[in-house]
Length: 196
Image (cartoon, rainbow, N blue to C red; front, side, top):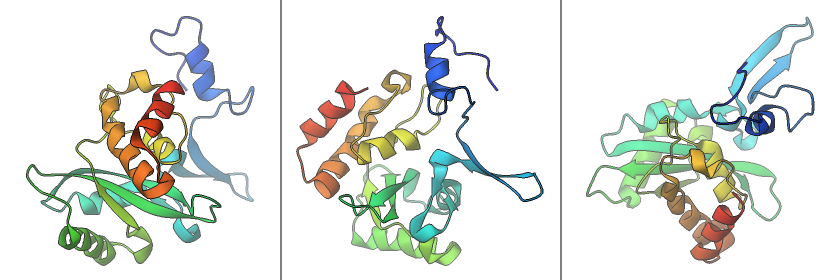
């Protein structure tokens, strides 16, 4: 358990990160289950687990497959609550950054889906694959699935200042405006920045 954050003299960010959701209880972000015998089963990061049709899938299971493809430089995958108006399930949405000069067309989309299907299960296959120019990262280089998930769901992105490239979220906001909200990209981006 960390004892504090750098440049957080009053501990406000630290408390917000670990103690805000359940007052007085440390919340670290991993899913676990207490067994009948008092043991714990650790499932991994709560923000890195997809759950389409009730099947738990770690995002790394998809990354391992997608990034074997020569066309894909890197990717980011989230679970999108679906349908947006009254969610009853989660659909897998995959954002891909392709090699320079490539475009995500129907043939490449099908190649990605076929590869995932052949090497994992049909539940791992993304419902949507979206090309983006960049994948958002923290200043330490970690991809930020939670921030993208928040953008796609129209929620504020917390700690926007911790991102090395917050402008990469624009690609996710474009997807949100077109595919989910059917709205205006400027409205979505302003909501993200104003609420962060």
